[in-house]
Amino acid sequence: MPAGIYLVLDSASTAGRSLEEIVKAAVAGGIKTVQLRCKDMPSGKFVDLVMACAQNTSGHAELLVNDRVDVYLAARAAGAEVQGVHIGQSDIRAELVRELIGPDAVLGLSASTAKEIEAANQLNASAPGTIDYLGVGAVHATPTKKDHPEPLGYAGLAAAVARSHAPVVAIGGLGAIDIEAVAASGAASMAVVRAICAVEDPREATAALIDLWKAETP
Image 1 (cartoon, rainbow, N blue to C red):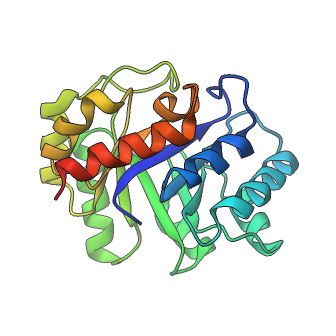
Image 2: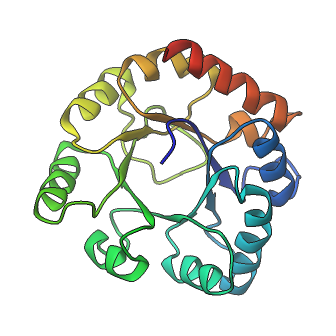
């Protein structure tokens, strides 16, 4: 998974734009990882969306599906260039998801506590390559994920990065103002939602975030 700015494209946070439009703009701005998070979207529509977005990410960015392993498998079977899935603690167990998606797909797992991170470490120790990265947060409280755990803050994020044996993607209410602290924590990537989805010019915002990240991670 490419390091840097990681776009979580949430269907509830698009400021009236289509998801495909935001993906196209973010790719033009240089984004390298896009996760589609569509909690209430029917399966068939979600598959169609993945396939449409893949037309823009193909050859430019990795496209991941949040939670819905079935949607990932269906889109891939239909020929979409989709690279993997991101799952939560209450979804299908990571080792079973790995069996379903195969050894070459990207698999990310959300983690927010020391216990969850240690469990991921142990799983990767017993079955290397099961989990490719951990999505750690929420760093700040965020309205885009109402069931987020108690915010970690920068210190909590740094502690999680130090504990994790897998690369960490920081997530939760993050934007340009957080880049310096997130980069200093050692996180491999910083996930954003509204900082790209809800702004007037997603392409420009994406490019600016990427430049700021690069400036902090020489």
